[in-house]
Image (cartoon, rainbow, N blue to C red):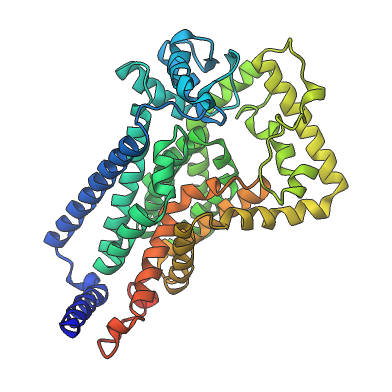
Length: 471
């Protein structure tokens, strides 16, 4: 009985292996419709599972932890929903009420004394989404969680669809299990009022557009890439550090695609991408410069945290982000009479000055910090993350001839440079690349599975690095 069961499992896995070798030559329109339906099913399943888990384990309408970034996004969304612009007012009774009710049972929800004023330290796109949920449903938190878990669920569906199209059922099954059940990050961030889930989806869509640019040179692709990347920066300011690398990537993809005038055409597409990105960002950049009365187009967030990237504290923490405010770093620059905007500006000036002084005194340490930050960000913080990371390493290696892997690797390197210039923060800066990581992990996991005894004496699996052409 055991031998028969083992034989059945072996036959099933060998059939999946055959799918991997033949999927590119035997695909039909019917197959592709099935792939789309399976991707939609995956998204709906992941979405429903996440929402059910959040409601059962926590509460979909529970306030977020007020000690982090979430309360600022929540406050900005609530003020925008009332037409007050990009500001916070945590003294608003309607805003405070759910936190105060939750704090009766758990003091950690106490949001402290009221704060009111204009902000430039948070990007605008996610607060606009929260404002939409507040306008539609009133004062609540579940709308943001439905949206964020939906972003992750759509990413899961796109991952399954792409793997079915290019790799077959085996890697798609591995991806389904890893993305939805093994990697806790896909569950963790869907419940937050943070920008990570939307960042995952935007980077995924950007990768698809770059793939289409490689396959088909047309002006629409650098335009679409510019729109997506501009929105990504409005979601998460850190993405602006990707811009130089993406300009080179867009130019390089075009140069590889054409046979004549490579340099000119590459520069043209890179210019189009850059111009569109700047057009998307321009309203927010102009607003910040007018509000701050200085050239600080993305606001104060980056400069106010420069000393968290380059300082003795950063060195002692090996590049991990430190809360400068709680450590009293800004005390010499602040006083109680300052408005929120004045305090933001003073902190930005002070932090930038101190960071430049530290870099000038410690140039070697400043350079060494970069790989330390990247290594700390890559360090797995759970068994699930460790499993995904190991499989992704194998997958990246064996799929090195796959153009998606090559584009993904470039995005990974660009992001690593951005981390090196800033800080590590519990793996959060790696989250936008979860699609790429799980694409590799699915390939690597399937490749490792093919090495198990289930495939012994069966058909020799084709190396995945040669399963598809590099297109």
